[in-house]
Image (tube, rainbow, N blue to C red; front, side, top):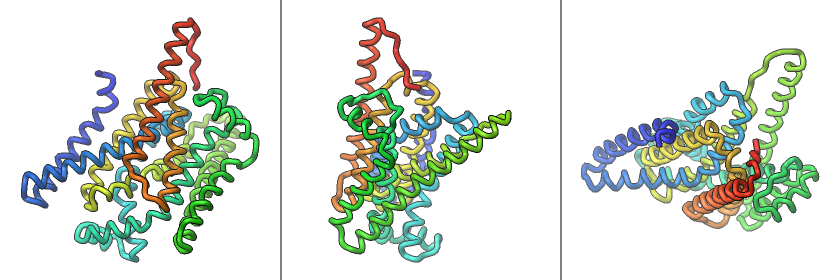
Length: 357
């Protein structure tokens, strides 16, 4: 228990501050105890929604972070969380409104506070483009994990081995994502289809660009190491994680409007969830959980594929965010249980556990 508190103390304190702010805002805006409690309930539900949608985000963050040096780990867990909380949960929706309605930042903030219905309409109206970009990026993240010729640990063995056979085909995952993007676009009106296709292609280009930048940085560092220089950098991984976190955030930000169109309420609820993602990431990295539970990564990446697919399909058909969160949590929960079962069987057979670092 003490160990868990060590990782989650800051998030619990941050949660208390956010709920205190929510209580003050609820009382100031409604003047009634019932109104204040109603607002706090929405903040609570939004935070749970964000956490449920972000289990897989924490696992993937930990997968990348464990390969980075401690300096860049700290930078991601400090600067990165500021970007995640302030940038994606507050600035991002306002930026959408400012761009879509051709408003200045101050005007967009005033709109969010004084005309929340119009603010919600504008943000929700950008869903098709957001779904195309975020869905394409996340689908690529998940598929790249399974289309890896070096991958030798399989959870859903029959399916993952079948996928692995095609890993030597160049850009096969890009072809799959493009096919899905095109298929969804055929169900949309012409203008929406163009927006969706453009956003989807930009999502693919962003994924390729971030990985290309990371590869270039690694090559430069390899040359410096060969020359005897000491190199400790994680810029490529940092950028990749920031884009990944942004893609995860899209779904929660848009889905939050199903519960409230108040910018302050949404920011408080989603920020609590984002902070717990940070704590979960630290917990996974410091405790070595990913190496202890060999199938946990697999569950997270299957959940990412599911989330990416749902985001793409949601451009045409509405899918409740609760359903999306349950799929991710279920896949990760099953992979965790499967890992525990594997470890127990290995111990019973006297076979040393094989870690997947």
